[in-house]
Amino acid sequence: MLQVLSSAWALLLGLGLLTVGNGLQTTILGLRGELEGFSTLEMSIIVLGYFVGFLGGSRLAPELIRRVGHVRVFAALASGISAVMIVYPMFADPIVWTIGRVIIGFCFSGVYVTSESWLNNAADNNNRGKALSLYMAVMMIGMIASQGLVVVASPAGYLGFAIASILVSISFAPILLSISPTPPFDRTKPMKLKELWVVSPLGCVGMFLIGGVIAAQYGMAAVYGAQAKLSVLQISVFVATFYVGALLMQFPLGWLSDRIDRRMMIMGVAVMGAAASFAGYLVGDSYYVLLGVAFLIGGTANPLYSLVIAHTNDYLQHEDMAAASGGMIFLNGLGASCGPLLVGWMMGPNIMGPGGYFFFIATLLMIFAIYVAYRATQRAAVPLEEAGAMVVVAPSYSPVALEVAQEIAIEAELEEAAEEDPGSA
Figure 1 (cartoon, one colour):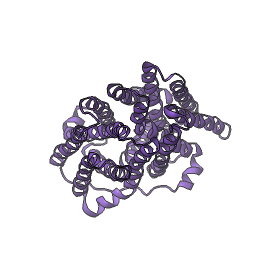
Figure 2: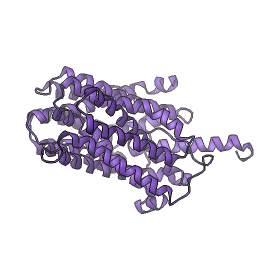
Figure 3: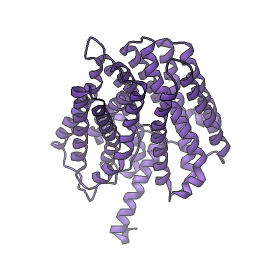
Figure 4: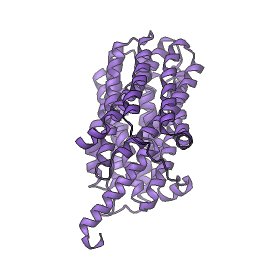
């Protein structure tokens, strides 16, 4: 771990600053939209813009990097992020904000692709898993820290947007000044969705539904808080609690998933998240209940992402796992592009109001749990001794980091097989 920190601390610092800026502007936008009188549906379309841009960026950024190189792509996209954050308070218009969110989503996707390839290059085969864990921890801690800045900067003025822009701008320095030779860039050709469906229908459905859940809970959390008349401090703590739950529950659930039937584990986690969401819908008037609900939703939705990938890997050959990651990210992004629009409609004053936020999340998780139960009747479970280990991954990973995670999973399986049968090594 210390070796990873010594070789990549500047890169991780820069990524942390980027994440703080991203988390801050997401929450500030939700609060400012309420002050500007934007409808819930308008805010959901604005939130949707980020995930549409992110999905597009994950497909196009690799080609940009091949054409002009890592450094130019990173500098150009990060500059675009910083500029758009300043534009928000200048033009308080839903159309302008939606376009801005599409641009920012595209830029962040490209920045993550670039940064993750640098991080992978800075690590070696002995510490890539630790580097990936540190990367996820830095991003989660950055999102939690960003909510503390929400209290400092009033959403009614320019300060919050300016702080976010400054954080993104200064993140360039440690990253660009610390980069050694530009790493080679070569992406695996994605597996076709039809092929992925044949391998794992559960994986495809799960990635789509989890994308909707994660986009709704993070993109619309501040909008829910504003609608529910929470104070700025209460909203910042509420949003941060999702990330705290995600950070603390990933590893224990991952450890447990390697020891029991993975499908039963996925179904149980989905039911737990759905139950917590229904509790938020029914008794959301209590702020402390809201915090508990946020912790459990964040702590179930994020591990579900890792669990579904691990389940899909159980039915893949080693040589196909990296190729499948592109299809899984696409399905997750497709679900994320639909989630905010649907939850925004449900949160409308003539539909369900603020409670629609939790009802939507609960519905998706329960549908997923029911589908997992159905799939359990259609195919025999993979024996525990043949199932691969779960590698903890985050929904914000680009295809680069997810491919690295797949390679780590393969290496772990091969090492385990060599220990059980030394003669095969």
